[in-house]
Length: 205
Ligand code: SF4
Ligand code: SF4
Image (cartoon, rainbow, N blue to C red):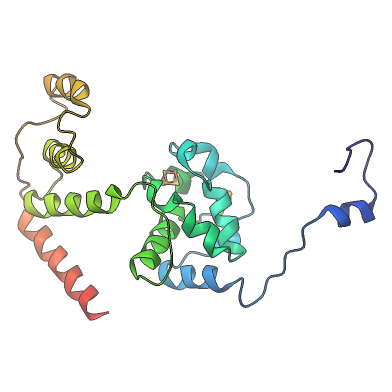
């Protein structure tokens, strides 16, 4: 192991450095992401601002900036086995902090799309998350907006834990932050048309 006493000579620095070769093969994942999302992860210079602001970073095996580096290096296994794509909350904090204007959420969505295409092996530490996304969309399509109470109840029932987080529900209900019954949005019909068009386009592709 290197003892860090005094400045390193250039040959010592070279011996300690990992050699990274960027080949057609290592660039495959970043190219795929760029063609799916339009985002160029090679612009990332590892400032770490995305990870410093991320509210879910404590749960992630690969933090957002590490994810970007792993994509740049074509480390598919590390990317898809880390589970990070399922932990991201899509809150967009990282996007607003990135000095390179990379839309990191779009990159993560691109990785999710690759997973859903069925061509990559992956690990999902929270298998209930994809079904939560589907349920979320179903409720939005039905009411034109999210019905939080219904979402929480159905998820709790699916997890066979009907009273999970019940202590948080009462204060929110009493302050009017959570509604007991669903409210339909006036634009629900228009939204349904948009969603059906999206399904039609996805069916065509
Ligand atoms: S969008 Fe995802 S990666 Fe970005 S800050 Fe939010 S949780 Fe973290
Ligand atoms: S904020 Fe942008 S440039 Fe900085 S590490 Fe994250 S992705 Fe890379």
